[in-house]
Image 1 (cartoon, rainbow, N blue to C red):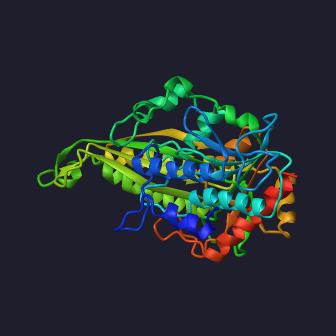
Image 2 (cartoon, rainbow, N blue to C red):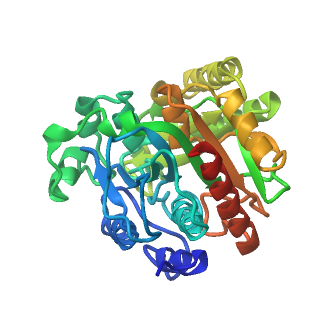
Length: 410
């Protein structure tokens, strides 16, 4: 007998939670993320779902048409038809919230349970997906699993990525028993006739329990490297310094101002300082900018303005600055016919854009008909231990997802 949403949620929410901060630490291919994946596989086995995996570890568990008794499916029957896939990811940002990603996975399992309990038999397969390293918190590349699966990121570039400890993705995969020769574009995509991702809304725009995504803002991660001259904090006159920290600080302030003026988003959330001594003027500051905007033109203008001000400040400080894009994602406009269909099926659910990136955006860009459902976030806080969604809204999300799957899988 399958468990309720509340039971499933409680089980998964216990994995990788920091007892002090209440945040989650489930970086890709770390023990806690692997534990969460093992939990998912166990839940799929309990339901008799047929699990398929690609070379990087993306998973889709299939409920095939032709099942005779709810809860006892033994595997695929007949032709391997394309189907409707739903799900999300199990990894987290560093000290992240409980809902970002896992809500979509648990809701997908619960929606399948609900449809089976109703006696619904799909005309096409329904898949429950769990995609790896969506946050990019370990290897710095967001939507890593889906980017590799769709061929956006080549195996060579992907395997060379390193985490903060200098461990390459190749070594992390080998440590987890992955055959590196299998890493590449995924066979799973051939069966993804439609993809629907349920996700907690990561802002305060949604006032109804459930909404539908219209688009994903263009966004990217950009590495700024500020170089200067290391020196003694106590003996070096202020006017004699070539301090890259000052250049970085002005750039962070400039990014904040320019983003506000443009109605965009700009965040320096990660910093590395060398030599990182309390009593030393640094020689190098590396800072990562996350920038997002409603259009590609606004995003490009924002980056130009920030980089120009950084360069002008570097000239005054006697330092140098270099900006390198690490990942850039274009705007995603979800297929209007599909998103409008979902909104109508859900009783004219509100339709809204999002500034957050998702695997759904990568799959949409790959030509797969894709849509997203959002569950209300009462505070708008995300990527934080304070991230939250009320249980009634989560259950409304399960009901909405089941309704959508039923409509798409007839």
